Amino acid sequence: MSEGQKIHAQAVISPGAKLGAGVEVGAFAVVGAGVELGEGCVLHAHAAVHGPSKFGHGNVFHSFCVIGGDPQDYSFAGEQVKLEAGDENIFREYVSISRGTKKGGGVTRLGSKNFFLAYSHVGHDCQIGSNNLFVNGATLAGHVTVQDFVSIGAFSPVHQFCRLGSYAYVGACTVITQDVLPFSLIVTERETRCFGANSIGLERKGFSPERVKKLQQAFKLLVRSKKNTSQALSEMRTTMTDSADVQELIAFAEKAERGIIK
Image (cartoon, rainbow, N blue to C red; front, side, top):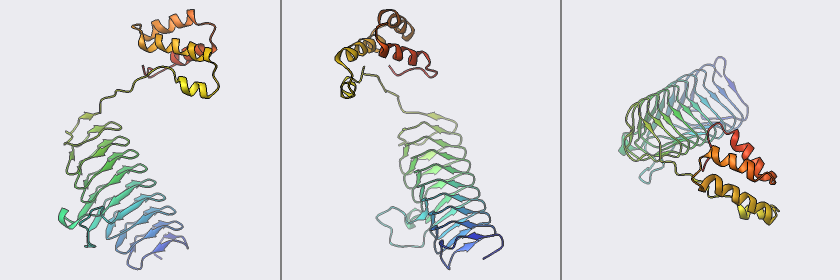
C-alpha cells in the first residue's frame, strides 16, 4: 500500500491496477485490471471501475457507479479499448460510462471537473470536455461530442454522433437528435395542461359527490373560463365560500411563486 492510501479490507483490487498516493477505496468497491487511479481518487463502497482506463487526480466515484465498463455495442468482441479521464470528475450513484470501440477510435475521453449526477450515462467513444453538468438521467449514445461548460438536463437523451457546443444548456426531458450550437438554450415544447379536478381519485379517497362537484365547478372557472387567474380566484373567493376545499385551492394558488399549470 502506497503513502496515504486507505483501502478497505473488503475492497477488491486487481493486481494489475495502479493506485496513486492518497487513494481511498471503500468496502466492496472494485478496481479492475488495467485501471490507473491518480492521487487522491476516492471510491465509495460498492463503486466499480473497470479497465483499461486511466484517471487523473481527485476523481470521486460514488456507490454503485460503473465506470469504464465494456461498450454496449453488438460488435464488441473483447478488444483492448479504453477510457481516459482527467481530474476532479464526480460520478454519482448508478452513473455508467463505457470504454470505446475499435471501430469508433477505441477511446472514450472525459476532461476534468465534470459532474455526473445519478443515473446519467456516457456511451462508447464519446468525447467529453471539462466543467460539464450531466443532470440525473442525462444519456449520451455512442460517439457524442460534448465541449466545455455544457449543462444537460434531467432525462435528456442525446442521439449518437451529435455534438453539443460549449456553454449550451439543454433543458430537462429534451430529446437531442441534431447538433446543439454553442451558447444556445435548447428546451422541448412544454404542453403540460390541467384537465380539471381529479374526480375519480377524489371519490376513491372518500370525497362526497357534493365536494367533488364544487371542485369541478372551481376548476372549470379557473382553467376553462376566459378569465385570468386573478379574476377567477376573485370570483371563486366570493361565490364558493361554503367549500373548504375550494378555499384551500384558492389559498394554494395565491401562494404560487412560479405560476400554476392551467
